[in-house]
Structure formats: structure tokens, C-alpha cells
Length: 147
Image (cartoon, rainbow, N blue to C red; front, side, top):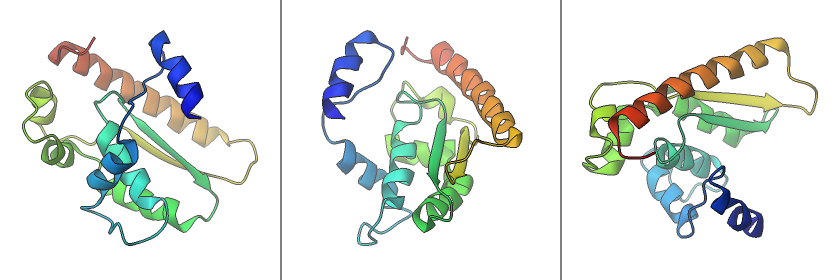
């Protein structure tokens, strides 16, 4: 996985950050989930909060049907995946200030799968998420030096 990420990063089509990904995700998620709770829920929540606007403009969480850690992460992100929470994480990063000034929910979609094809409602939700992410990306480009 790491070798693939490193090879794709120079293309500009794939974002790759070299150091501290797991530690940064845990730090971002610890406000909502104790690091002592085993499982990937803290990584899902923390990664979403850490990566939004740096560089992600939307997050899709895909988990197995009935997976409790996925459902815990979904419940938290449905409520707390907001500019207010991101503002608390970035501690005054001036580049993001215009995007974080107003309260907004960030584009998020949780999908459970049992391995079968997604129903049309999931496809519609994916399209809606893509539109929301595109709008957020346009705002990001308009208000920051990230290009």
C-alpha cells in the first residue's frame, strides 16, 4: 500500500502525506473516541476530520454491513463533521479561516455493504456528495492559496 501511494503521489492525482498519518488521525479523533477503545472507529473519525480541506473536500466511509466500529464512526461524523470541529483542530490556520468562519457541515456519506451491487439510492447519494464536494472544492480554491 505504501509503495503504491509513493508511486502515485507525483502524478498529482493522488494525495500522499509521508509522516504521522496514524498519529494525526488518532489525535484528531480523540475528542470523540478514547484511544483506549480498540478498533478502527477512531481512525475513521480522526482521518475524516484531519483530511477535510487538507486536501479532501468530502469523505465516504465504506464499511461491512452491521460493523459496529463503522456505525460508531458514522454516528459521530453525521453530527460532528463540521467547520466548528475543524476550526478547533487547525488552531488558527489563516489559509482556512474564510472556509471555517461560517458553521457548515462537510460532505459525508457512510455506506454499508454486504458485497452486492449498490442500490440506486446509494448511487444518488454518491452523486449528491460529489456535487457538495465540488462546491466545497470551488470555495477552497477561491479562498486559499491551495491550487
